[in-house]
Length: 141
Image (cartoon, rainbow, N blue to C red):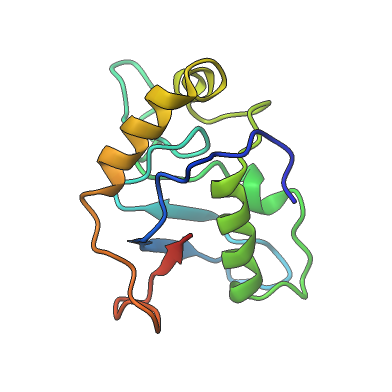
């Protein structure tokens, strides 16, 4: 289990989140170089929400903090294992090194407000369907 604060109730339940996973040439010996969700659909402390004026132009809305998947990567991990790791992190984010400090603070101090904001963003996504949802995405339960 990833250390952090459990999110209950889950604002992501019943939705399909698709992500683009970029892998290096030396994959699986090296971890994916990025995981990017559709912009402004995953309101979460570890996911870049929006690029603000003056921020690094390399920042991409929807990009997951790389530490989520690089700190525990081993060459025997599969994409299915990565998916499981991501789902666990969505359920229980590590608030000690968030990508979005404001969202982490909101989850820590005003959990009800966080759940409402996350549910509103997730509501723009299609419902999860048994069998994978048709788009290759995985449901966040």
